Image (tube, rainbow, N blue to C red):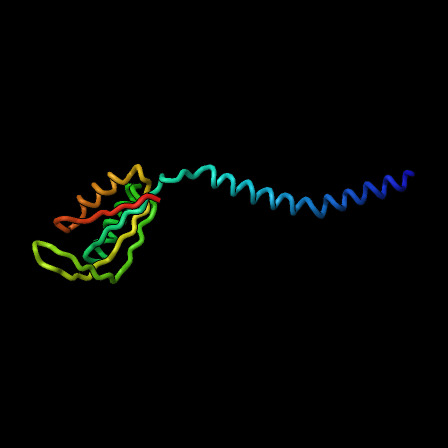
Length: 130
């Protein structure tokens, strides 16, 4: 009887030794996914799109946005062509595009900063909520 109990106990230990790492890994994965989902609230983040005449101008504006904590990240996409009407004429210019990732609550501050630091007479700040 004692040897059956010891055998059963050893089998249980072996089962636990094999299954515990799998259970811990699965548990950590589930908890991290639940935590990530629980902390994000839809609509709290936005993207703003701004064109600039050159990479240098875009880098200056992007650096200011990130330095002042108005944006988490700014991607600068080179070599775009913009066709637009300005002062009753159709224009075509080479530009760069800034994709500004920010909090929705900071969009007004982002827009103000861009307008104060942009060389265009009228610059665009087009935003979209995530």
